[in-house]
Length: 284
Image (tube, rainbow, N blue to C red; front, side, top):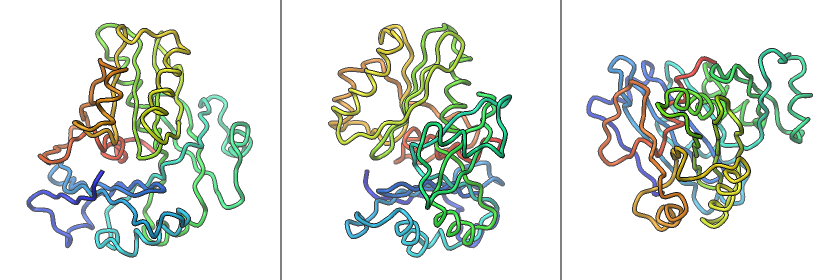
């Protein structure tokens, strides 16, 4: 995806103190949306790929570069929501959750590196807490920049959305949702009135991608022609990647925004930044 920055008429950098910023960082780039709550609309959308000179640097260095070089990240905002695209997270049902035990829960499934610290969010629809790690240097950097910041995991919106959409289906077929990042994707399956699985896979090419998707679906004995499949994220229409996966997932649908906030950018498809557009919309 190419770099771009689009904004609506009336958007003003002098009014950012009244705007909401949702920001997402990965190893290969960052994206953000700016929301104008007074107009109930998305005011601006930005996507930026890191330069080759940053390719071998740590994500902390990339975060520093992002904050230093982007004019709109030097501003003050009414509220800020921030996510690092990261695969390491653990869901714990509310009835078993004890905040004093979050390290124990997390390290049951993942290694907690010395430079990382743990955060957690409550996911209402799943009635569970999502525990996730962020490099502590990034936390310090972002808190110093945005004291009002709320740290969010990428799967929070994803899980809430899967359950909400599946519960509202007229015909109770298996529901599959996929959110694609630049080098990884999240996949969730809801069937038999419950969330069956949520997982994150890293991929290098379209063959990796479709292998992990089909393998996950096959594990739950789901027939592609008897299921709903929604996709969001960085899958651009009329590209080789899209046409390739469409051969294997012919019934795939691009997800529609349901935030109630006006999105009227003609040159940007809403599904591309679906998670990010909803990042501020949950109860954390």
